[in-house]
Image 1: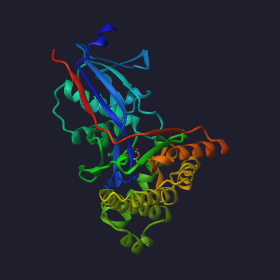
Image 2: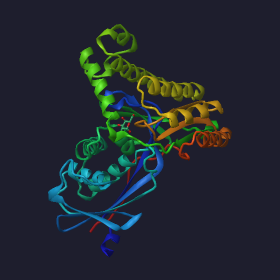
Image 3: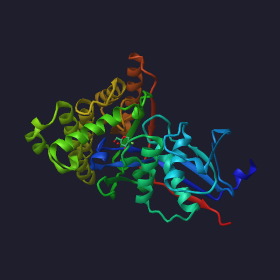
Image 4: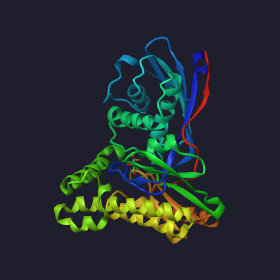
Length: 371
Ligand code: GAF
């Protein structure tokens, strides 16, 4: 096993928090995520045969072995499918040893899977001199997750993990993957973004996510538009009778969230954090009432944060658990954490975990050795 210690390439990629623009990446909307400081590292080494060996630094004796010739979508397995899916999507034909390390909280809705996919993709791109740019890598890692793993995610998580830059949120236009960096320096204004992991189950793979996508697609087909990006709220209201109640509510969330995201960019550029907070809270209400993907733990975290002085709070990510965020004055954060922990205890919810992060750098090549 000592050969694991002489890598060809080391690459890392971060998890993400989405400031606003939730569940609209697959409707060709605008999203405003940033990379968090928690990262996944992939250490890669070429082999001279067709064997793939994968292990994580946390369980070093648990080596998963596969053959490069047998990679196929839909294969059962655990977390290694995210690695194998990227090898498959990048059409690698040679054996590789891959060791994974990292500190992105698992199951918290902070995109540990995109961090894993993107770290491996950046490493493979370098090791095999594939010459793929970040946009191509985002599309290929999304393909790995959609087709190989079978999770129908949009393009946001992989894009931000690859394209983010420290100190900024990333405005991503999910129609063409063009990006604009929006400076996001909360500390200079005495603010902090608290991440509350509710530790409630994240049900992205359980079908509810796919149902939301399908409702948006059927709304588009009845409205005869190619995506919900092509219509505004007043046009939706005017054509309400074409949709069933579910389609109308889902479309209402998506269209209003696209508008909120662009407003958030404006107020952020003006450092108007009170308005940013209000938009963040409106996003939560829309996700809770129109998109119906919140849950008791997320609503509790949001309500308690707002009751204890947060400027805004909302659930983030796929929904049905995972994390919420609260934008608050630095001096208010400890009180908010304590109040949420108390409320969770009273409601007999699992104890929440708290994180915070500055906007951090996207995927990076850490080391490439020439042999
Ligand atoms: C998950 C998906 F992977 C993203 O593509 C996005 O749709 C998000 O849920 C909701 O905004 O993280």
